[in-house]
Image (tube, rainbow, N blue to C red; front, side):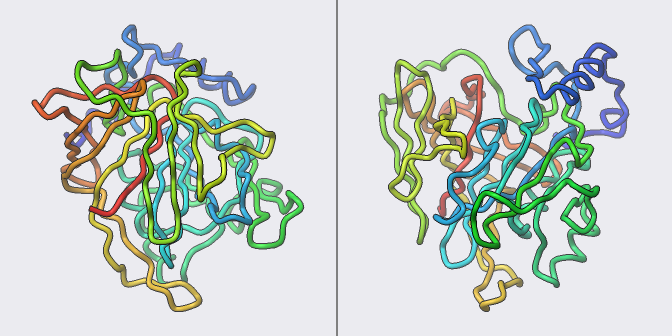
Length: 315
């Protein structure tokens, strides 16, 4: 449900604040304080850093992506893909390559209280919408000095990276409560599935279940996905969420129309966890709400604890 004003002002426990401050300084992981492994009730929204990340061949391998709590996979111009990584528990030293924002991001981020958004820029007609959105926009021109840098031995525009700590981001324990995600033991039912492939017009994602590691290995466009320091990307839960993808009123410099992914509404999904696939329904009543996932009989569908990938596939 949409949060009330009381929910906006609910005071977080002093212990959680202390943990958050320490974690920001050290880069350590913040563990959920709920006894059941879920964010505590009223732990609050916001407290996240979202980073738009390049995902074409010259941009790989990416940096810092393994530290994200949630990775959203979106379709952009020419049928390509781009990632939005959300950090709530841990800030890596660097993230990138950083690329431009899209209208889809603004609606998706409304589920958080004024999240920080790191991005390289945006189409000129989109900039006023970003300025008026309830996000803390932190492109290079508005970020503190030294937050962004060029590197990685790559050509522009695939060489822009950001230092999250330099942005003054404020990750908070329980900040993911507003996503609507629930975490818990494996639900009954489901169908055994060891591999799942999702195709965009010009991108492909394959997830392979690795039993002894308890995670899904990610392959993008036929190549195993790793970070710049050689770590394989391996979410615990993968959500293939079927949505409407329509043309927006914006376009890139080449004149290609930017697609808009509708994340408000309801539809079908497939949730992959523990080597099984669960048919699910998703529902997000408004942009201020998170997305709830339920089983075919209407029960909340719990995710496996760990990183979550949400792939927006065209319905």
